[in-house]
Amino acid sequence: MNSKVAAIVVSHNSSPCLDRCLHGLATQEHACDEIVLVDSGSTDRQYLSILKKKYSFQLVLAENIGFSKANNLGVEKIPVTMDFVLFVNPDVFLPSDFIKKALHICAGDPKIGVVSGKLLAYNLDRDASTGRIDSTGIRRKWYGRWYDRGQGEADVGQYDEPETMAALCGALLFCRQGALQSLQSPVFDPDFFLYKEDIELSLRLAKRGWKLLYHPDLSAYHCRGWQNERRVMAYPLRKTAAQSEILLYKKHPSPYILWALLKFFLVAVLRL
Image (cartoon, one colour):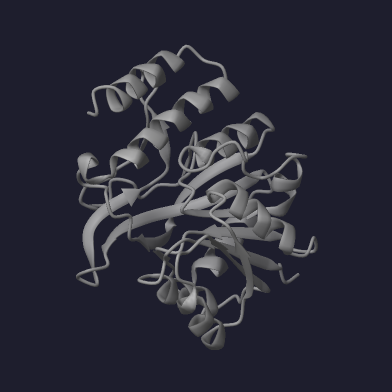
């Protein structure tokens, strides 16, 4: 049976990278049956008109409603007949066999709710891979801090085994439609404007018995711009990230909220 796959991309002033992202989706060996691009408040949307002539996708225009609400809007636009939904950031570039491999992996275990792979850091200015890892799944420190496993490390094969993870990076999520429908609620919690929404989704899916799988046979490039130096990340974004961490532990009560409160104090008051 030929599985049907829909892809959802949320853009926001994404002109430097979106063309290559859409090219990766358009050239998949297992073609996407539907591609939905939700633009969340780009200040100049001329680049979208240009891309619309180049690629086939459904374009949805919205105000700057945040990552969670924009993805949920994309979910509303895809047919219910889709078997899988691929959430992909506009700064992620896929190899042509990504969907084919992801389908093969999911076919081997019906309890896999989400699978993702090795995200490798990419320097868009130099148009080259950095040779370092961006994410191989998300883990939590003993005191409560969530982090992308392997981020900043040279890729020397240290994460070359499949592994069930506590959470997966929201930049690239290949989701079984049945898992998303089991949530009986919006896929992404709309209370999260930006950051930690992927962890919150992962926690809800895991509580419902779905497996969150990191698989090294899957790989892609990710142009996340601030992975090497936290202070390069603008203060408003760091404050938003800290607020999202508090919200996460309110949604999923845990003593780890003490870490989140401390982090918010350090960022919001001391601006560290």
